[in-house]
Length: 306
Image (cartoon, rainbow, N blue to C red; front, side):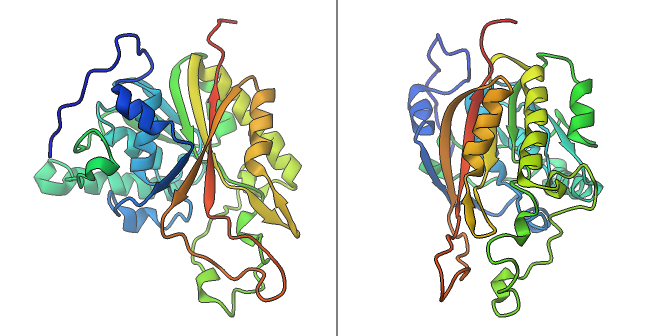
């Protein structure tokens, strides 16, 4: 049902949220259970696809209607779809290395636009779990470019982006971590048909080492810092990893690299998607964690001009 939202504070130049929704956003731990929608049967072919409603939540806090959102690792378009369902749609530019994921995104948008004889999809009203009332779908300002982020980003003008929301590759060959595939034959929930890593040399997951992965991510972060407007924010969703018998604090490592790239680290929101599977990685011999939470690193570019 439609709701009457309070007007934002007159001094609020960041977003269009009333005070109670601003406060709700700032909790440092989020647990979500979003409905399967907006082409989820197609999008789930990408094992790390993000719920468009999660991305809309970020977009609505860190931008205003009509502003430009950038995702340099767009995948199957969760950020772009999030921009389309934001209350007050945003423009969104995505960059994606894999043509396969880009084709899935294109199909999702085409099917969404065709629903209800061209009126677009009806999205479930989640009530208090999604403050602000029902959502609509407006894909008019979306663009997805196929290419390497480190090639496309330098072509964007400095200070041209209002908000960055992205979900980069988490690590080097992350699907091979944890139990190294040793449990795949005995436990069906470790088997997958998802091709999460391409054979493209620009795929960050193909970096020769963890440090090389961080080095390449820092290059991306430096470009994101350049294209972002002063005083504006970037959010990076990342999961820690467990490799070669040790826990890697990937979120903390990327936060340090973001600082080197010029960002100020403003927060770490912990996100848990309800229903995440548990897998018997170390059973019955050793403790190996099920890493079911993800970090949403909140970064800001200095408000002062260079």
